[in-house]
Image 1 (cartoon, rainbow, N blue to C red):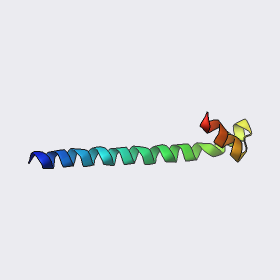
Image 2 (cartoon, rainbow, N blue to C red):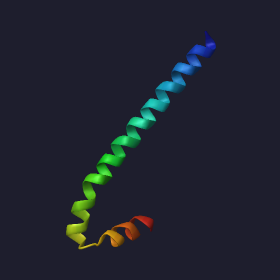
Image 3 (cartoon, rainbow, N blue to C red):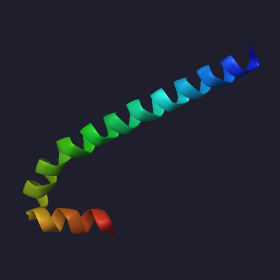
Length: 52
């Protein structure tokens, strides 16, 4: 029973991590167009700004 509880908690934490990663990716993808237009960045400029 103790092992099953550990597995369930681990699965829930992993699922929440995946959900948050997916949400973060969607948010970042939605802002790249806005960043390009506001700061007049090229695709390379946007990439270079993310690396700093």
